[in-house]
Image 1 (tube, one colour):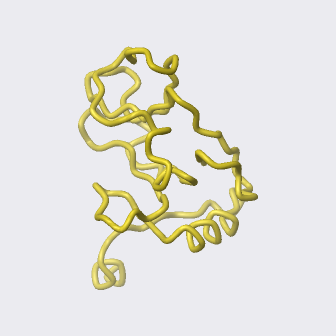
Image 2: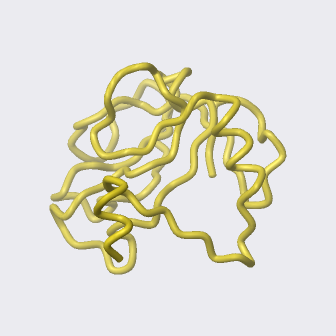
Length: 128
């Protein structure tokens, strides 16, 4: 879990986002679909296709990474799928919740429970 704000009391390891923190979305990079830090204000060692995470203070106030395409990472299959604070706009594959709801969910999650995030319509999810 990550966030620009201090940990809201989660049970997972929490990284406080600072300037120079990136989620690499460049499929040509060996760091594709991974968190990486580059010195603040420097050009990262990968093609920039998104912005420094610290520049999204609303969405990334708190977030959890969805383990999608993480083990193994398949180039081009998708990257940067998070559960984050809603900005009132659609996401590009993430799950967004109002801040209070997100904080409640993040506090509720427990590593020992091995939680799963399922994304889809109600009808599609019920078919499983």
